[in-house]
Image 1 (cartoon, each protein chain N blue to C red):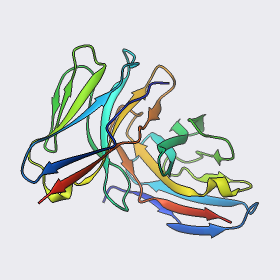
Image 2: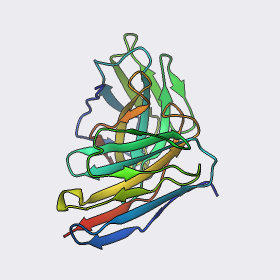
Image 3: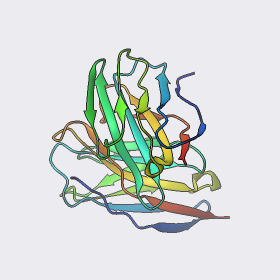
Length: 111
Length: 113
């Protein structure tokens, strides 16, 4: 199974950039890298995803290592509303469209 | 409003009493899936469906059934619930497979006593 490894928790000061790391050393060539976040008492929410190239959207940026064995979610200016659990996920077309969540990183944003 | 709706949001039941958790999406998505979330284990996929009448097992399918008779609905069935199925359940849908943005429901907290 393709799996991801993330730090259990991280802290950031408000209005500073946040870099959330994820290791996925067993990633296969067809696996996409996704990031979702889960606010308290809510379902997960899509943040961003990519395959090989770095990606940007209005919420965040995704930096993917050249060997694809790791990636980093970048929140450019953390706000209190960004406090959540962030999940790095691989979706595997090779093993039948499954979606593998890790245990996520709990981000605390300090005012 | 685009959404995934789960019902009920909370359910307490007894061991062995069959139950169904419904999931409906209004986005005409082909892909739907069910997850359970347990402390320390993150979200684990139970079943998923690529389209009507097409379902496949995820990581933890034991004790669960699903059906996909209509595109919008993907109910989760527990034929004989046991206490180890006490969990928070999420349904999700995506346009065409897990490589597209997934939308999650608000969750169903199930307690089996």
